[in-house]
Amino acid sequence: FEFSNHENRPSVGGEDSLEFARAGIQHKMLRKLRKGQYNVDAVLDLHGKTIVQARECLSEFLQGCQQKNWRHVIIIHGKGHGANKPVLKNKLNHWLRQTEQVLAFCTAQPKDGRTGALYVLLRG
Picture (cartoon, rainbow, N blue to C red):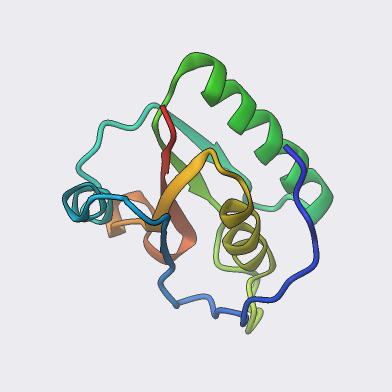
């Protein structure tokens, strides 16, 4: 997977919630995703990684999920070290929208990391 770094999205803060869904995603699926009601197939922890490392890890992770037909994953990006603008969170907000494999994503429930993690729904 190739991800562009050309960002055209407004930056989000550490405590901001994220949500994205491709056209045609059922509201019921999105609601279940928001509530963290899907069984999680895999978790990717990008905490403390550089942008370059995070991009490589994300690409490999998504390829692996595709091969194993995993649909529901959690990606932990952290909230940034006291930064106003958490870098990895903003990068993920941009990168995940670029790949057709990602159908939807949203901020996780408190038990799964809240604003430091995302639930991601992948194409089957």
